[in-house]
Length: 116
Image (cartoon, rainbow, N blue to C red; front, side):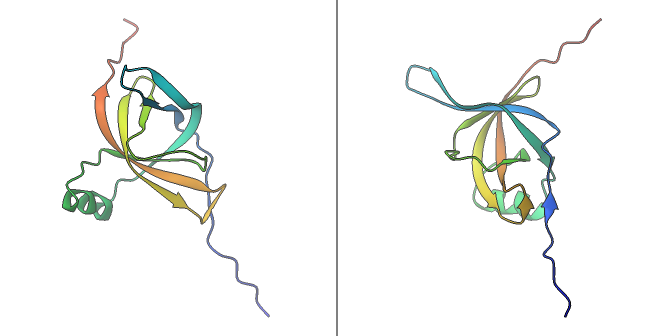
C-alpha cells in the first residue's frame, strides 16, 4: 500500500524583519510583535483582481509565522521599505511551520539612504 504525503510548503521567513502594531487615538504604538521574520510572496493576478473587485488596493503579500492577534488594519512596518496597512490575513494550513499570508496596502515609503 502506497502512503500519500500531502504537499507541504516549507517556509523559512528569510526575507527580512517586520514590526506589527496598532495605534490608539493619541498615536501611541501598541506593539504586537517586533522583529518578526517574513517571506515575500507573489501578488498574483487572482489576488490582485479580487482586491480590485472589493475596492481594496493590494501592494504586497508577505508570509509570516502563525502568531495570535493579527487583525485587519493593524500596521506593519518593514525597516527601510515602508509602512503598510494589513488588508487581509489568511491562515495557511499546508505549510511547515503554520503561517499567515498578509495582503498589504502601502501607507508611506521610507527614504533609502545611500552610503555616498
